[in-house]
Image 1 (tube, rainbow, N blue to C red):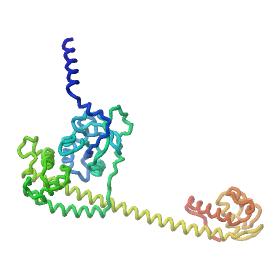
Image 2: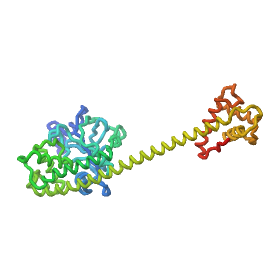
Image 3: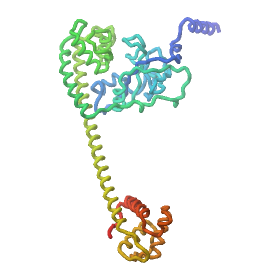
Image 4: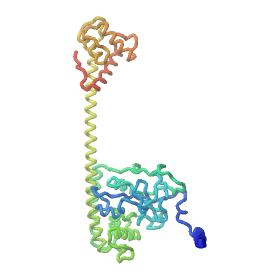
Length: 403
């Protein structure tokens, strides 16, 4: 009992003198977050962010579980360590996510130059997840940490809200040409060390490469800052050049780092080229499909116009037969009424009692004016024309319009 009482006293003292991290998480005040994106790579992708499946696995973890042990899922967030697992965070334009992951580069405000807490949102698996992550990039998002319990189906993050950006084949071609030009410009930095005393243009080239590989996320300004050393350190850790900051060369652009960076960047360039070519191919295929559909639509419009002219001419040639009038135009009228389900007698070519009765029944069902009943007037011809066109569409073979 004494041990239990002592333990309770210690816990009470700790709760008084040590503010818990959880207290930092229950604020409902509006906050700003720096939100980046990650994904789970698959072994059969046509391109990878870091050039290979293995490199992307190292960048994104094994891609199956968060640091909390939960399987990855839409709405999983990686957050700084002072956010406990299970913390619900509302992000404007996305919904509610849950903290179930960590990351070495996912730091709080004030670290690595960030002026707000950084979050990383899981964007899916395979190429679709990668494309969505690339489309998202890095954004400043308003939101808040939720105090209340949130049901899983209440405004949870829906990945379909993140639009995957696609550009035209022409734009990709221009990007590719620019990429080749840029690569030629930065090639020299793989042969020389870069330090704080280096030419600002060389520093910019290093910043550019590290930025393309998603290690450096700050301004390309030619200044050798702590952010560059942090980016180099992350690169060295992920590529197993060092194991901690205590290792010699940690955060410095030495020969081993240059050699590995050149290798990784070459893979990145090859994959970027492959990706852009594939996007260009898909864009071209889509353009061709649009053109094909336009041709089909134009042909269909032309066919309908021809059909309308044929039917209109056919109806006009029916004339305005009078009682007991005989002729091929009367037979055509009988055949027309028969095809529409109103005349079931023999095609006598005589505008007799049965033909007039069938025509009258048709007119009544079409709300033709009483004064036109039993006569083949203008309003009746318009109705017949419309019904015959519809019949042709349904039967596809149509009627033999001849007079």
